[in-house]
Image (cartoon, rainbow, N blue to C red; front, side, top):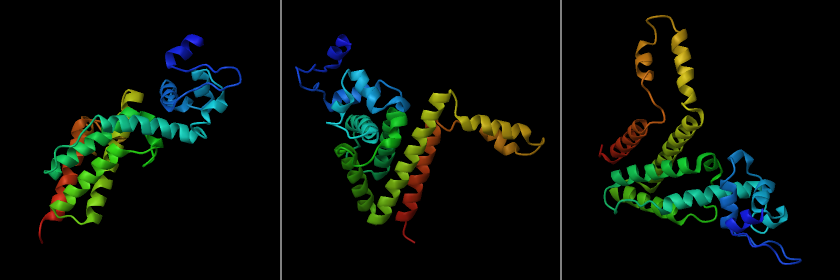
Length: 225
């Protein structure tokens, strides 16, 4: 255990003093556990400290998993940049990909992310840039906000599909749709069968199609009557 503590950078306490750990060490220890196994006690055990030591940084499990999710997503956004201001269409595409990729990296932890948990400067700055470009293109502030909410919803759904497909080996909806088609009488559901036989809900192709539809909808909002 002493070797593990030294590798994690945990400073053993002097007599009568608690071990000194940082938020970074807590996040690293939690990320080494499966999301469902992240508890205050499990992280304390992984760090070789008493559970009460964690309470200097996080009050409970909910705050702990939020801290992990926030750390992952902030790192992902910090490593990505939007295009230089100008083309709102490309900005939406790139921003949507950033959101999806960040949530894929967070995996099951992404469900616990809360803005603006522990600060989220990169994500907020990218959101502001996208909003400004939509407003400058002619959308109202309300419509621009709604467009970005829709973008985040599309990206979150796409990330969830990728995560489920990775966890199960294939997307669970594929098996359900296949069974429904197999039970249908011959000659029925032919168009649906032809499409779903090659459909990949977690594919880049599906996500890019979703982005194109969103952008087309925004363009219609900008078209004068």
